[in-house]
Amino acid sequence: MAKDTSFYIVDFDRTLADSDKLIEIFIEIADKYFHIPKERIEKVDSEVKQRGDTFLLATYVRDHLSSENRIDDWEAMEKLFIHESRSLNYLLPGANELLEWLDTNDKSYGILTYGDVLWQKLKLSAAGFKHIPHIIMDKKEKGKLISTWLDTDGVFQIPSELGGGSADSIVMFDDKAVSFSHFPPSPSRGFWVLDAGHELLSQQGDTPDNVERLSNLHDALRRLGDIDKA
Ligand SMILES: [Mg+2]
Image: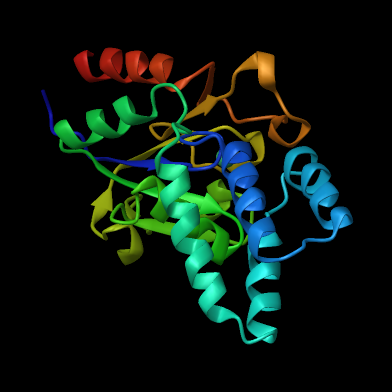
């Protein structure tokens, strides 16, 4: 088998992790330290789920506590959040298996995630993924960013935050169609991993031809196995 010269990109929210569960845990904990106005909490649902916008409540709570000189409380909250979320299983089906497959098959990979830096970092820590090379983006179009890595020889120069090096193609896993906007053409390929039963408005949209839709990461793993054998 020829050496795989692909670089694998995995999304975090709703691809590896049940992000709603993490938000719930956060709100529950934050509530012990600080009364969050009800409207703020209600906004989360429409902004995060329907529009796919970033969750800004963590930064709001931290800034508020900091303005009251209660940064110790924030740090305690962070610890409690990491602790509480670790005891729950919020990774999605196939998430552990995919990461294990990437590790055991010696694939180069990283996490490309969209959202508020503080909140994304907090979740990556809670998931124990801080050691995985990652980039936190403030735009939803990941394909557009990836396309900028392509040099004049048609080789992807992987950014140092994702471990550096070069790759002939990109393989990306993501639950949102918009993430594949401007995604590079074949031989790069995408897996739009989205369970039809729990589809959100923010996940829907058109994807390029080299993006295959699958229900979960177990199916994605099966496809990867097939591709590897080919
Ligand atoms: Mg996502």
